[in-house]
Image (cartoon, rainbow over all chains, first blue to last red; front, side):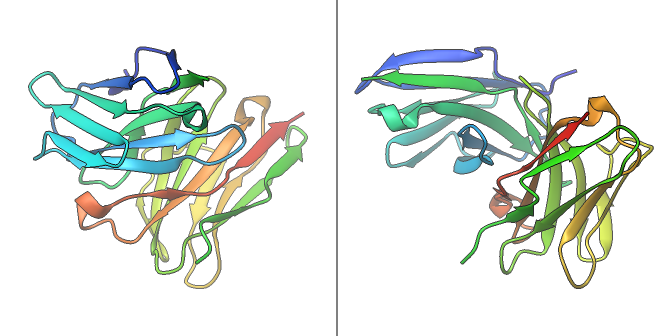
Length: 111
Length: 117
């Protein structure tokens, strides 16, 4: 029973265009959401987070949108760069402190 | 400021042996989390510890797995009598606080890749 779902295992985007990574969740009790980026053989690196009381958070080229009624969030990267190629994990957190991760989306940004 | 450190990076064990994975959190962080990632899967929460206390072990298998975070020294994830299904990447994360939930950003170590022969 997956509480956090990333339904696209992979995404390919041209350099300079927008990358949109999607994430759905089932538990309305989650308090905050995070996006992590992971390169092979490395640990996940924190990218950006959003509290459940907000609907948008922006940090440079990265913007996360939260639609609570649809239980959906998305990460926008614009403009996309080849160095953004990695696996992106969506994660949700609640009062217990642990994070629940999706299975990840592999982003490939082609020059 | 060093990040989260894990060692060893790679660990090979034969079935029935014990595996010990170590994690040193970031300086100033008192909350440690262990996650396991199987191939083609996301990270699965195992256990959440503060110094000398286990806060949440709901993701830990009931047998063979244990974790500690002593007053001094790193956090240890211990797997006794390993089986092939234990082969995975084990990630440790730390956070400054678990109480202020919005700022509970968890920073991950590079992981330990356990291979059971």
